[in-house]
Length: 183
Image (cartoon, rainbow, N blue to C red; front, side):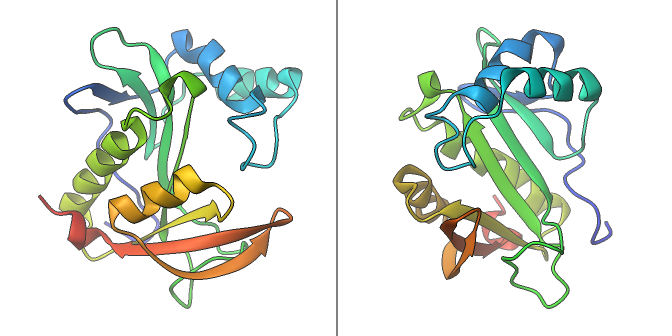
């Protein structure tokens, strides 16, 4: 694996969840993720529906490595998204000199909040990534005002190493070694 790679696994199952490629049936759920003011409260605010629809039309259902739809394992209902990708070097919030660390990010529909779904999905992806790239650092960035996400960062075992300003808000930078997630 090179420093530019991410997780190669395209599908993961947990007790309650299926992490899979985005499909055409996820469209309304994805639109909700990007337009819901409560979901987007700590993510730069809601985006206009026409803009989101154009983005989805452009992307289609192309699989992007490290990108997962979080779905209910029994019903396949779209619950949210999870991404494990390289943090762009031109944005603040890095733990290595050259940047480009793996970054975990996630967003859930409001109907999925408070059920441990983000933890279950993130833990599964981090364990799988630890098997492929155990020597890699992984970061998570969240607004300090997002208490749910801050609790998740702690529960997953990330250590907040600093804060910084981005998107007109204070962000927390958490870090962990993928090795710590090995099963």
